[in-house]
Image (cartoon, rainbow, N blue to C red; front, side, top):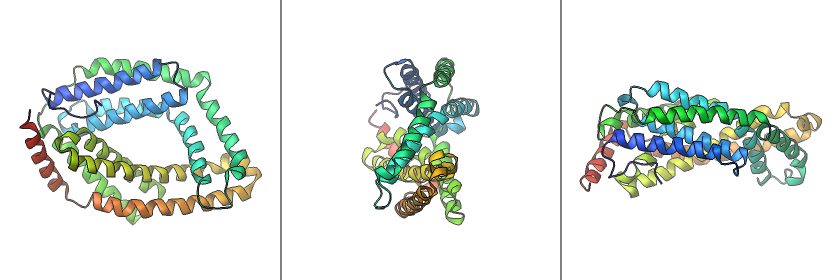
Amino acid sequence: MSYHLKLKDKSVQKAVQRMAGSQIGKAIKEIDDGSIPPGKTVHQVRKRCKKLRGLIRLVRPSFKKYSKENKVFRDAGRDLADARDAEVMVETLDLLADSPDDQLDHSTILPLRDELIARLSDQTENDAIGDKLATVRLTMTEALARAKDWTVKEDGFEAMAGGLAKTYRRAQKALAAAEDDPSPAAWHEWRKRVKYHWYHARLLREIWPDMVGTRRELADLLSDLLGDHHDLAVFARRMDDWETIRKDPRLGDLLRGAIAARQEHLLEEALPLGRRLFAEDADALNERWQLYWAQWRTAA
């Protein structure tokens, strides 16, 4: 796996250039691979865009072109959002059908699932998705050429300290905001900040695999819990647009009940984990990781 800093990297700048080139190159190959279903391609390319944004966010204070490049990868991912969202709606319905609610089983949701599958097909099997992927491919090709000349003005841990701390503080603030105003939008905002911290733990995992690796795994779990919560919120918001629900309001009521119960369960798991994960002061975390970095580099 190439999405992390390595001892053999001659500098942080070289590491960033290497990882950016790898993620962009993989995105291009995935778009070009005709054997991959369109929905899978969209999912993979959006993941590449998010990983690229996590990478440059780590070196943000030292990377003058951050704002420009972040917008490029953000917009590329957004261009493919509709197709991915359609697939997520099917996955979310299946998750609800696996809930303990005896009133909501696979036979009950089958008509709605058929409708959502049809919507997914419309998003991924027409010319529109091909055109969008072609546009993203051009964007990635241009970004690949630029990434070879990216400049990170600092080196060593100093190149990453500001980005690491800023992302961590934002996750802390987003958690506090969600606890004060527990709306779906607030939980989603927290999830985005957790996700960036997860990327940073992935990027720096080699500085102490056991310690940082455990943090990476916990941040990944927290991100998944909050991601499921967000998917359920989007599902609930869109239900009234679906023909099956308009014809069968009782099904809508059953689904809303199952969604509320599932979201409550997810937050019961996520909140204690998140409070522990982000309990430490950002400066203290930075100091610890800088010491890990220094010890790790002595082996270079």
